[in-house]
Length: 343
Image (cartoon, rainbow, N blue to C red; front, top):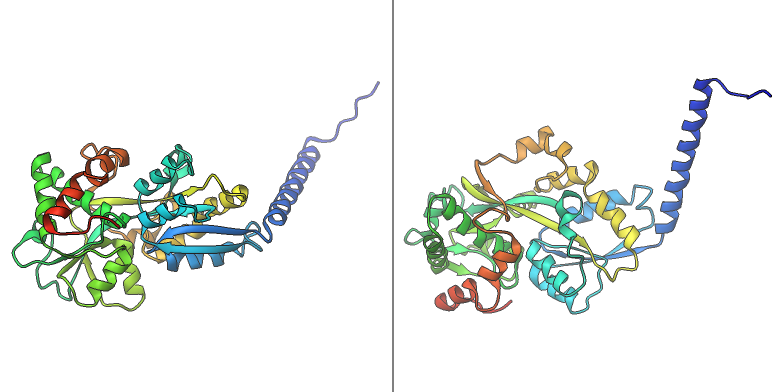
């Protein structure tokens, strides 16, 4: 009995050819399965320009060919509440994990959303101070915001995720500067005595600031860069102590297009998409892109950057309970300064 064998190199070639053919078939099948699919997503206001570019780039990929999108943009917390109330969505792109947790509590998003790749985050940014041309009030750090005569613009924390980041950044910065919990809360209370406008969203707050109101705007770095890209005259300062804003995406459980949605969410972390995020002022989560010359030049490092899981804040659940839940600190502070009581 003879056992017929092919030379090893020929065997390997056939295996590689078979694997390549299988991959092509799988890619074609994936493209065919998503062609004609419409994905609905609900997002916060700032990323609208970059999302248009991401959708265009996705259409050039095998998975994205023939996929269309229904888009909704607005204040992050209000957007999350709309989805909880029944607005159709395959996925959400919100500005705060707190707003995703609202959908977790509504049974619409998996509790493990932040255990996905990149901890469920699509891109990052930081809290910055947008200032008037030439920085006439000499705004450099958090202490400058509460000097006599300084007027501050920040969004409404009951509708805007951006506002929540600003508040937590203000508190966390004080703690990192050596203040006690009581002293840091007192700083936030004093800061809101200087607030002259609280719009529904970060983008609306930017428009209010650009219209001439206030001396300084608390905002996203990405929002300030986007305003510049649109030809608006805006300068900004990155304080030494600031907060890394992690922007989450999550699949909605009721989606009938889960596979197509997950394919797009994976694309959002690809080098192509992350480079687009960089071009529109967002800090990338993809480590390869983060090391690129463009990202290194655009986004200066700050020694005092901290995250939501910082020991002084304790994550979104702890932050919500302490600051944003009904009757919590921000309700008390807003009542004391005559600010908004809801979104």
